[in-house]
Amino acid sequence: MSTPQTKIVPPLINLIRYNGLPILQQLHVEEQLLRTSSDNWCIVNDGTEDPTIVMGISGVPSDLLEIESVLRDGIPVIRRFSGGGTVIVDSGTVFVTLICNKEAVPDLQPYPRPIMSWSGHLYDRVFRGIGDFHLRENDYVFGNCKFGGNAQSITKTRWVHHTSFLWDYDVRNMAYLKHPKRVPEYRVARDHLEFICRMKDYMPRSMFIDRTIEALETDFSLRCIEPNGMASFLDEKFRHSTRLLTRQELEAANYASLDEISMLS
Amino acid sequence: MASKLSWASRAASYLRVSVFHRGFTSVVKDLKYAKSHEWVKVEGNSATIGITDRAQDRLGDVVFVELPEVGAEVTQGSSFGAVESLKAATHVYSPVSGKIVQVNEELSASPGLINAFPYEKGWIMKVEMSNANEVNKLMDSDHYSKIL
Image 1: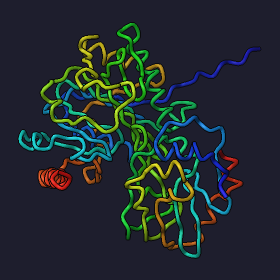
Image 2 (image 1 turned 180 degrees about the vertical axis):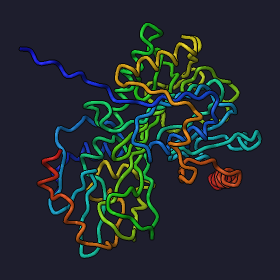
Image 3 (image 1 turned 120 degrees about the horizontal axis):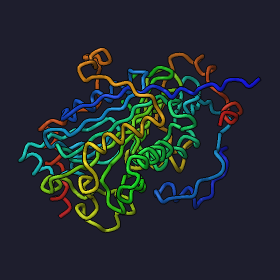
Image 4 (image 1 turned 90 degrees about the horizontal axis):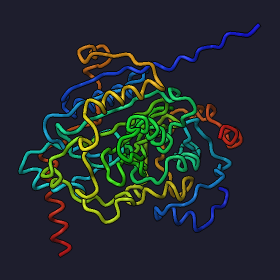
């Protein structure tokens, strides 16, 4: 007599979809869910309203930003809880974040390279037949042009992998960012605008989001949570490390930077 | 004593030049280890803490260390900071409870010390322990080697 096969039930992941949630709020939600929830989460945020600069945990404004322009134009600057580089995000950015328990994906070691590689396979399914998609070093590219930047935060028991996808971008916004000291090797000597590309030249926005959700269903069973249903998962008293830099901090950074330049000259 | 690494691969790691993945991980005798891959060197009531060779190898080139504040209290198993490598901020956990009395300021300018010398110059903090018995909950080098 044959024994019935045990059906493997994929782990549950909560899917929440936002539309234009301010990026600071999104990062606050993510940081809190990483640290206090025991569920797996996928957060999709379709655009964020106002152009905002987001630096990684080690971001130094004077190294990364044209501070005078940032101050002049009142562009908010955030330092987030995850690693990685600096981006300027706006309504043309689509965000996808995965927050998982370390055992959620079988045999996935909770370290930067394995998580990055696993994400590359996930998005292989999303972009199958569209463009020449690759995970290149730590970026998502079509050919050798970057359209998705990644960052992670890893704890003892959980990890976050979040991505900002360049659906579209305003060339003028790129002027707020300096050429970073650390660049991927595949960038070679290209300036920023030659190095990045727009997703909208490859696929419709809704198709990208739908395909991402579909790709997730290979590894997870999805449970949709409405944005207004998040209150029970979040505590107003939670202390976030992700924060908006104050005008005073940016001015001080600019002053110190100018001081250093004058001492060297 | 740590297993000998070739001078070339340690120097390359310190200089943040890519090195091939080694097939071995060094474990130092006479240290104690946490399951989260931190090591502790106990001298009287003082504990020097860092991350293991296995941890630094898995994390990749360290580019930033979020150091804790001197004077802060830590509890066994709680996060005391983060190490950034590639695109990840990975939390590090204190193997003992107590008060932080010193942090390795050299890591601010040279975070790669963690990759090149994880058990020596790459130490992260020193703690005055509040309960030396907690060390008994940690693994010795033989036990830690077995879980790798």
